Length: 377
Image (cartoon, rainbow, N blue to C red; front, side, top):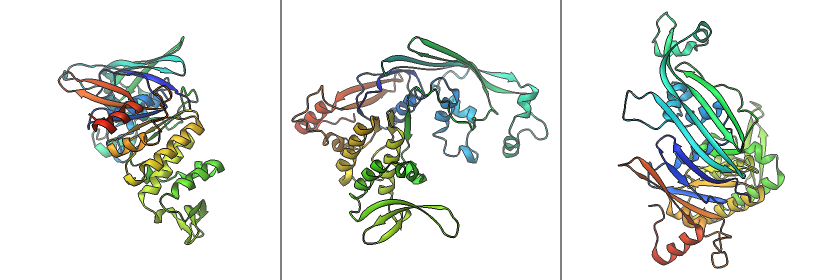
């Protein structure tokens, strides 16, 4: 299992003003108090997926706005939330910056510019979505000729290669529907805490027989009677139905099962998509009972080794942390061989600075056993 991202230094991103995280490992557990920046840390990593594509930045900005498709904040407002908040209301300059070591190369991402009032040309006016005017009833019968905009430059340096892109993104701009470019620096997959409720995880699993077999084995922890995963068509609607085959109950729709099985399938699908890349799992313990932690986490570690995936996992649960530590035999594993790092994030609210304590899984395991060490603080 490779370490695709060796370290990360965030200069400015969301609520993080300065944060340096060295010695990243195969499996990285990101822990800490509420609002210390765990999710922001994962989102900053996502900038490395395709740092030179501004669309990638915009999609990261939109991830938290679950109402974006139904009257939530605009894409422009979402973009501004990526920049650290300033107490100076008159300050218009904005900057995002991070550095990382990825696959042996130094990477710099920097988005810097100003918020200002601009004049819209005729072409930009004609591109203003009509639903914006209809929903907000802001323009009456007229089309605006000026608005607020972010103007600046996106600079990306990878090794000896540097690229600068001019950015102009205003209040009525929309996120492109096109795919992010194929210039991926890293194959990266992000799983939000409730992605398992959205479904759609079967297709990638069913196309890989060895992987499907692994998934069936992990589902048998919940129900030993499960023997297969199937996609069938509804005879009336012709729509696909995600099903499991049960040795006693026959073929059952996945919807008959609880969130735990759906969560595990979501993680399995994420692992399948993140082959030879990076998987980011936010709040891994959501919908999973603690009795299954050790077996499920052992499955994650095994799949990561098999498919060459580096994983970053946030958690509030000390049981989840202990579950991951239990998958390594620390009686026989040295710190040099240890595949786990535990990264504890802490924010100093007086200075607005963030700090990271990086410990090996071996160190945390020994201190948890001997002193009841609380790693989340």
